Image (cartoon, rainbow, N blue to C red):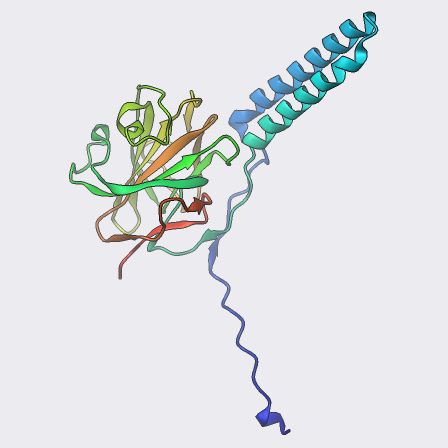
Length: 249
């Protein structure tokens, strides 16, 4: 068989363009003191249980307690992990601000406290459980116009009414392409602390970290007109990587 007659191998798939992720410690800064507290508590409880039971000749019963304290400390460190992400370089895409599962896709007006247009717009809601990464990321490059905290209830964040009733922190982002987004961090049944690292006037890159929510919660993304949702309810998302929606050309 001549060389020209040999079958040609398929061209390798093109590598998608990526935005470099900013360096970050493996544990989010807001979680370090909590992880340290768990570690100190684990040492104290383990020592007290071992030596206390040793006096009674029952030190073997201390081993399960020691194991439990180690597991709890490991879980706490795992909860506050902040891994690097492969951020797509696509100016027409809106990236997931949170790890988790898409729990709701609908149309709704953005939070009134942001002062944006009250017209309903496409909304994608991502629910985070206690084993997801809880560091939140910016869905598109732009400038922060407003950051507003509103007290509220602590209902299960997967419920539809959590968007209206729960404590939340809303962020108005004006993108480089001239679109307005709303990103809303919503507290949940266990979550009692919303952290936002940015302030009005800050210029942010796509996929940049902007905050986190402690111990289970939800993040809602309100999209501009013309954005086509690219995910479905029940789909898993990765903050900074999964494209939730795209602007139609």
